[in-house]
Image (tube, rainbow, N blue to C red; front, side):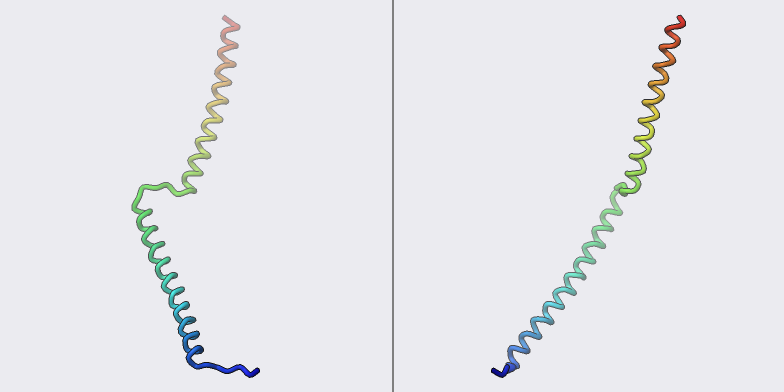
Amino acid sequence: MPQTRNPFIHDVSRLMMDAAGIAQGVRREVDGVVRHQMLRLLDGMDLVRREEFDAVREMAIRARDENDRLAERLAELEAKLADKA
């Protein structure tokens, strides 16, 4: 059975493909504009970046560990001083 090409269907098909391409382009453009606006909004806020938060968190953990070690050492020294008295 030979295929027949209907010019109307071909034109509608091409029009739909073009519309889909245009819709994708518009979507990318809207995504870009929204992303840009969100970055501007976030930059205007006093937010901490993840890297800075992680660095300060690591410093706090180290400080807490050092504080625990010093508290243990102080308790040992106080115990030795109490034994001498």
